[in-house]
Image 1: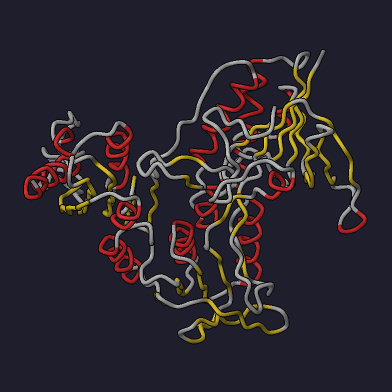
Image 2: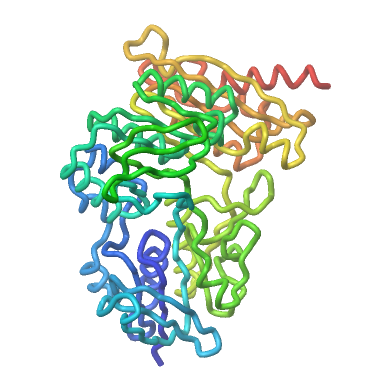
Length: 459
């Protein structure tokens, strides 16, 4: 007898789960229905800032697989269809189709044997006066990116204010510079990229200023002014900032409302709780992607980190398990990378403050080097910071800020972190060397060596 898998959410996690389940179970054994409230499925949300900037010229290029391709795999993708409730007792979902809207929207019920919750994240929207003004944009979905491009084309704004100094804020500041706008970045923190230590975040602040971005740090957002419904200024605790366009980069939180309402366990981060196989507290219900809580493998604390890498891996694990195989997602170490024009930034593991909050006695070292042999054309500056445990020398985290060729070195540090290496062990890593790619002592090795030398002073 054919069973049915229902997937709520048609992006990275949801469609990875659907695809992996289909690889292992044919349509005669498993019917798959995926609901997506938007107009696109299986696209790269991380590519949206580069679409807006013009690096990617066609929105379709961000789509990994279209609904028609899923149809060939006997996966029924239903666009503009939003699941509004999960009934665990009746093993069914209530969904609202594109046939109606508002109070008149048509609701239907579909039963399931297995369910994947991949509802993603909810963007943080400020609850301040004027927040619904025209010209205030989020950039969470592909539709958001397309709408923003349309707004830029129609209204030709001159002044953009980016609210939030994290990864999205950095990337959207660059995108607006590429469009020739005057850009101001507002953040309530005293530094952009608050997941970095202050000294490394200060380098990002310097890079923003060097690119012509006006920084308004340590200022709280208080509201928006508008004329005829269109935004004209941003009000902060530090005063008024004229604006023709506002981009919100305030992050997101797990969209776990459906799961919570159904009685499925939700963790302290607000994400859906799962085990390593992505099973929730409800029988036959799985969850993956930005809506879930996962384990940080260094702090051993629950975290909710919204990244496409995690979403794809979690969805894949869920789909394999639904298909009868065995797969796990053990957790994360918090690796991330971004850039602002020519400045690259990366981090993994814990910051100094996070290490202290997790109970570690930590120390840090910072080194400066070049991305290539110093004599080789194109060598660029790179600053590497390592955070380690005082008692053992175990690597706890790392941060990198530099120019071209700097950021991806974080991957070597992430692997060392994943395997619990000490800084002393890292000094012997067999990293590649040739003048066009690295100095004879790679910046990672220089930082590890300095950290190992510093460890001796604590004994």
